[in-house]
Length: 217
Image (cartoon, rainbow, N blue to C red):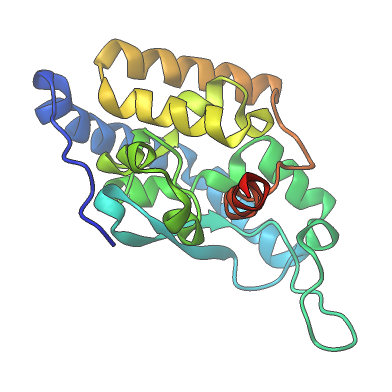
């Protein structure tokens, strides 16, 4: 992997305050929501089985790989050949509720405290997408990935990849306190309204870019 584009921090907020605020806010929210998280964990255990948490490798700041924590939303149901069924067939009604309300994302607060993530930043995507970013798009990995971000308040799952990544790069180039506050407040409104939640997601980035390559010839 080539060295990532150098990222220059601008302003006191990004350099010194953002990380401290992330830790304080995440710790406070964890303390407040811990009873709810324990109830969710119990329901996941009853309805979906173990493990309660879904762990997956994702690229973080400077493309360093970390394990993201989420509540499980799918079963481990397999076909007669012992192969896992497609995601849409393993996603239960309970799992859909967790996703539409973003409750499955709550364990990521631990990722924030650990330093893997921030409250606001580009969402951490799949590791298999790494070879498919254009050079300028890799700047999204020059900052910590976030629990929410520009793409999440401007369309979420309905955005095409070029639009989504462009918003991530735009955020990475200019991080401000006011900007982060606006994103957090708009995220809360969208979660309450459960807007921009699509059951059928756009094709994975790697498939889209491979298709673009084929069409170019």
